[in-house]
Length: 241
Image (cartoon, rainbow, N blue to C red; front, side):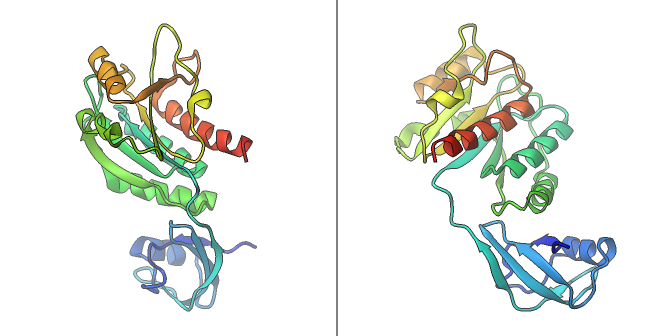
C-alpha cells in the first residue's frame, strides 16, 4: 500500500501539518501515531516521515528522509488567462494544468473579460489537492488578477530566456504553437477571454513583442486552451529529449 501524500511548504523547518492537512489525516484517512506518510514541499522534494502525534488541529511528524529531489527543469510554463464568468471552469483548469505540471497561473482582465475578481485561496487549495493526487513535485504559483495593460509591456527586457506568446483567433490561422516554441525557455502564454482580444489589444501585444499562435482550426473554450497549451509545451520538449 502506498503512503498517503500531504503538502507542507517548509517541512524541514516546521515539523507539523497545516490544520487542513491535519484534519484530512485524522478525520478522513484515520491515520494513527507511527504511520508512514510522504510530504511534498511543492519545490521539487518528496519526503518520507513517521507521524508522531495525529490530531485534527495539529498533526506532528518525526525526522524527514528525502525520497525524491528534482531540480528546477530547464524550461517553465506560465499562463496568464482571462477568467470565465463561471469560476467552476477556472477551478477545473487549475486542477488539470497542475496535474500536467504548469509552473504558474495568473489572471487578467481585458476589454471583453467576463470577470474582474477571483478568489485565490480556493484556487490555491485546488492546486495543492491536484499536486498531491498527481504526485508532481512542483506546485504552481497562483497569481492575482491584474489588467492586461500590466502584462503587455513584459517582453520589453528582451531576455532570451523568456518567450512571450498569445493565443489568437484570426481569419488566417497563425502558426501553430508547436512550431514556434523555443526549447529550454520560459514560455509565457496569454489566453484571452471568450470574446477574444480587441483589435487594439492584439495590435498592442504584437507591437510589444508578443507572438501570436494558434491551437488549431477549432475555437477552444478558455479552460481547454490553457490545458492544450500546457500539454503542448511539455510534449514539444519530450519529443526533443
